[in-house]
Length: 201
Image 1 (cartoon, one colour):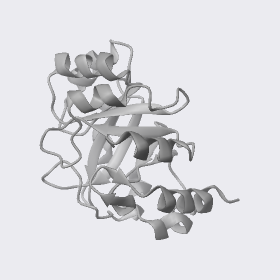
Image 2 (cartoon, one colour):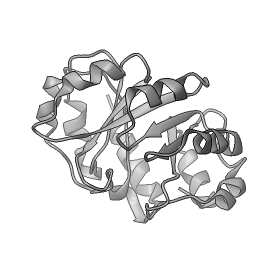
Image 3 (cartoon, one colour):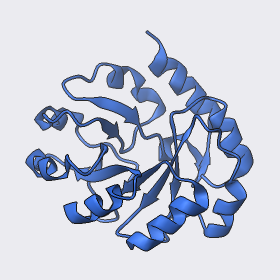
Image 4 (spheres, one colour):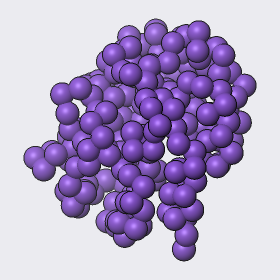
């Protein structure tokens, strides 16, 4: 997200997290100038997440300081050592993994000590952004207790299916392309309807 009024509209719905993509090849890329303009638009109770892909650590630190990020989401093929170094600067780390039916969940054990959350997205060659869902049944292979962000093509009609998912520590949902008017511009009305449905007992 990168438009102040749109951010205010979405924040009015009380989301837990708001994501800002700092990957230059993404159509949702937020420039430093835009990031500065957004300062003060996100309420304190909403966590700001910076999304990076194989970025140099000093650049991530710069963005944390510039924009007051609460969490860093690593969406590339960052190794364990990289995550550990980032974690040492006292920021919460979300490590993303591209999931398909062949994914080996055992590889996550090495990351468990240096990440606060895992994010499961649909596997692609472009570090996500496919707008497609992976087969959620494969999540039965995830047995760690680390909380999970579920991503990958979640749409307005998925609330009931998500509410019935079980067997893993689902912590948050990443609502992206299916809730956009255009890249980086969220449809607040559509998100509101979805949140009402997902939060309904």
